[in-house]
Amino acid sequence: MSIPVVSRDPRFRAGRTLLQRGQCEQATSIFATLLEESRTKFGQDSIETAPAYYEYGNALFRTHQQQLQLQEEQQEAQEIKEEKLNAREVAAAAAERRLKGETAPDNAKEENVQPLTMKSKESSVDDAQSDDETDAELALEMMETAWSILDKYSENPLSDDYSTWLTEQSPRVLVGIGDVLSCLERHADAADVYLRALALRQKAAAEAKDASAESIELLRHRRLIVEANILVAEELLACPEGEDVVTTETKVTLVSASQRVEYARGYYENAREELQETVLLMGALAAKGFDVSEEKEDICNVSVMVMGVGITFAQMDEQSSTAAVESPKKKPRKSTVFCVRSSSTFCLGAATSVFRFTITEAAIRESIQQKILPRGALVAHTFVAMTMTRWPRHAHYLC
Image 1: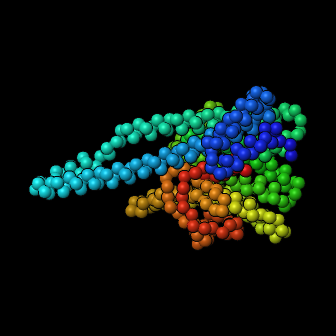
Image 2: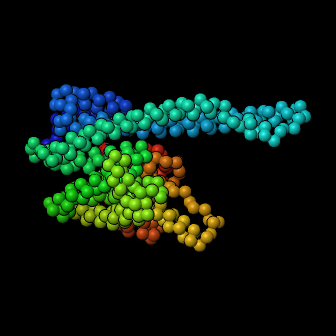
């Protein structure tokens, strides 16, 4: 398979390795240099420059995610510190009043509990968030530039040398764009981009199936179809309730407000069915002696994504049933998003609140009984105890 010149540069590969290790700032510096050199040598609209655009944007986005996590951890630590400080001040004031024989006023505790540096802290957090949004928007601009080059080249290719590379990279670039849009809370736009990636992945899977009924390449394509379906479902569910799902720039209505949840459920069901076929294919390949260890881990991660959306739908159905019988005593459970940590760290799930959740075999079996996961899910991977962390929800940009 022929690939653009910049992709063969040792620095390009080094940057990708740094991203995998979590050294995103160093990778960003490398890709910024490669992008500048590629634009000078090949032109800013050249297919040879497209990989540098995307990887620079990807590195910026990964750095942005790391900074968000760090800020949240610092803010939580500061809040805990202030709570302890205020508690000590309240206790000291109470002890002083007891020595003086005074009675504490009713609102004394409330007055003392007020954070000491809330105004300055909120100001610094707002400034940091503004800078982070600028980084995310720049990452989006770089990725969209890469996509426009790929899209234009695919319509009028100068040769067939890059056809295989284009087939692999085009949906990957689209999913990367969707991730940034989702981070910026442009969920309708993210759903639109994921849908386009899904169509390309389905086409690639059909071509791989024509070439061979059973192959590792086909297994990977089917797994990526599962991922694209579940990403669409996630974004549709994240769109505002009671509003049509409309793209920002083109103003295209993807789905009406009344049909949003059912459309999301449809893509979830597609993901479940495709996941079952993927697991069966993996078992067939393993029986024939193929090495499926790497794909098995990725399929495990996608299975957890499917499980997370399935549980969300189960909770929504439970809430609807509760509302129908007018039973307000039972409070709806808070939606849980899952994160997987295995031998190689792949993290899944939207970056929302932090929950601790342990995935056990019993939980998987219960999900199978409720038809949230296919019966073959247990053979995909041996799950271990896992703790929720804050990272990008999937690792497709490392593929």
